[in-house]
Image (tube, rainbow, N blue to C red; front, side):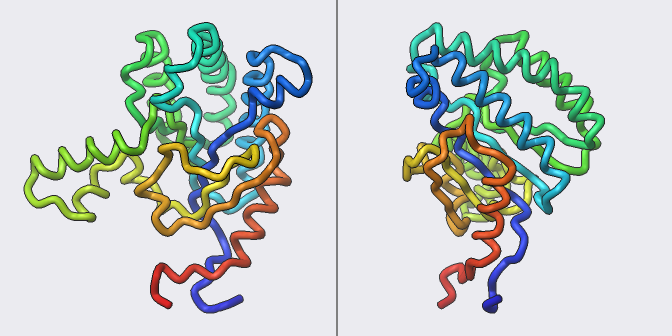
Length: 228
């Protein structure tokens, strides 16, 4: 292994893309694609104990997703309700700590209440699942800069201190599924020196084996942080 390479990714983030295309290719409603996407999340979270990952951050609902048709947004919100309700006992049993990033308190009151309950009940977990809800990275940076300015000097350090992810390990690896090669306003600050892997697999077909392949690829890379 070359000097400077990191053998293990502590913090991995995933842009879960391709639910709609997965459904379209099978002549199914988009809602079924999102349902299969939730199943892929569930399977991946269950596999975390087999990896060295300390935090998995998932891009679940962006601040731009409100532009989608109302019916699809409602489907996504209902899926969120069902996922939290059904999987909370499993999170607790498997020592998974839930964290939410983004302006999630702007969601429907019943969802906010449900998430607050889940955050409290999983607060002692050793491994973190961070879910980005109503999240936009530019908005996050603006909020953090505003808080830094209110305290005094604006620097990279003071902004970083106020990011939604301030209490998480530095981002090591960012994965995007479905063949798209862009960040879509996700973790722009945190990804400054993260490794990136773009795969053609649509999110509902993404498995723990795909994740392990990405971790293996990460381990082969040399991280220089601009040094040489």
